[in-house]
Amino acid sequence: MSFAIFFILAIIAVGAAVMVITTKSPVSSALYLILVMCSLAGLFVLLGALFLAALQIIVYAGAIMVLFLFVIMLLNLRRDEYGHDSHIIQKYLGFVLVAVILVQGIVIIGWAMKDYSAASSLVSTEGTPGAGPAVDYNSAYWVARTLFTKYAYPFEVTSILLLAAMIGAVVIARKKRLPDIENEEG
Amino acid sequence: MLIEVVIILLKVGVIFVALLTTIAYTTYLERKVVAHIQHRIGPNIVGPFGLLQPVADAVKLLFKEEIKPAKADQFFYTIAPMLSFITACMTIAVIPVGNWLEIGGKRIELLISDINIGILYIFAMSSLGVYGIVLAGWSSNSKYSLLGGIRSTAQMISYEVSLGLGIIGVLLLSQTLSVAEIVRQQSGSIFNWYFFKQPIAFFVYFISAIAETNRSPFDLPEAESELVAGYHTEYSGMRFGIFYLSEYANMITVSAIAASLFFGGWNGPILPPVLWFVIKVVIFLFIYVWIRGTLPRFRYDQLMRFGWKVMFPLGLANLIITALILVMKS
Image 1 (cartoon, rainbow over the protein chains, first blue to last red):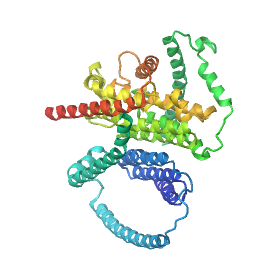
Image 2 (cartoon, rainbow over the protein chains, first blue to last red):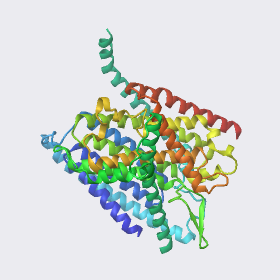
Image 3 (cartoon, each protein chain N blue to C red):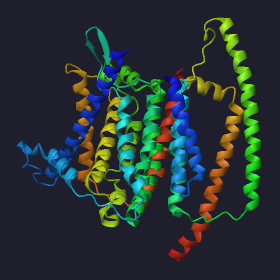
Image 4 (cartoon, rainbow over the protein chains, first blue to last red):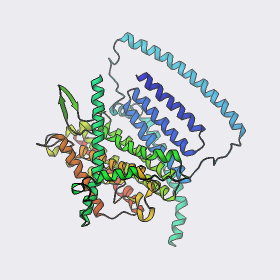
């Protein structure tokens, strides 16, 4: 059952991901990206990580993609406005880079498979899984615990990065607005 | 196994039909109450006291001719109302409508799914609900729709933040994300209701919820004097009807969340739990209509300023103070 659901979700995710880059209209592209996010959330649910699934939808599908769509709508980008790509070098470079990433992916998955089979044999010799202190990825408690203890430093660094981006956005927005307001009032 | 599946399907069916009926009669409630506020009588022709008016409305909408703008983006134009309605209905799945029933020795919880991250699920669904409106506004290919859609999105994104801050006030006290568990914690005395422990959080939540559901006095997306009807200007027939249904569905779920998180959900003396839940939700719906009947509409900049400069700091301050008190206590 979960195997079938996994394949359905995986096919939707990969198919939608292909559509993100092949479709011509920016809005459809953004919507296909939302579909990718949602099917990834479905995969998280299959793995028993409900909390991560909810965050995936709230943060990516909900917040970030709404802003994407918002910008696309405000700029009112329509179908085929880009025209043909004139950079031929990019095209061929793209193929090369994709090949590199593909090889990397295969190697990493190979390693992960080896680790996984080692780990699963370890579990089977140890007896029932979850005999030790069970880490429940389902609950907000454990995610928060690891985030604020083990990964506290990267977490804080990321927040500074976001703060910097936010201040940057405010500065850029102010620069254009201020003269207009002064003109209207003066 | 089979019985479990049947029970779940039955629960989904019953709750969905109940939701649809409530939506239909919320429109009746709204028309009647607003009419009385304005010294009119309201619908009174179809059936006794006009009680069959929602049925008549539905039949009218179903048989109305649908006019599609020729230059609309056909696909997105079609799915926008569906997206809006589905996400509006899905939230109700984690809200307990009653305690439990015992049928043939089987204990049936009166909610569709008690997931332990129920509140996050509510946030997730409400954040997806924006897409219906964004797409409707964009795909209609009309200026009024686009402006209405953009306004509405900006409004929903802004108020979602304070909506969340209001709910987190309760979460800090309850220490759980499961809605069913939060309701259970409030059983016993009326003073266990989180409203009495978190009154500011409740006001932040409820005011943001009105803005989030695009209702008066925050119904700028549909400000008819400037935008015709906002994002659904170009919709007609049942597609237009579905937008209306989802607006009311959103009102009902928001009221149900308010009742469950702040007012003890199905808890109450003497009367059966389900009835208490319904009474509380109806009171909130009445307040919604009451506000619509009394307050004038905000201006757009007032709305944004109010959202970011009043509701957001208030919610944040409430959150920090609650957290401080909790830390001092422990």
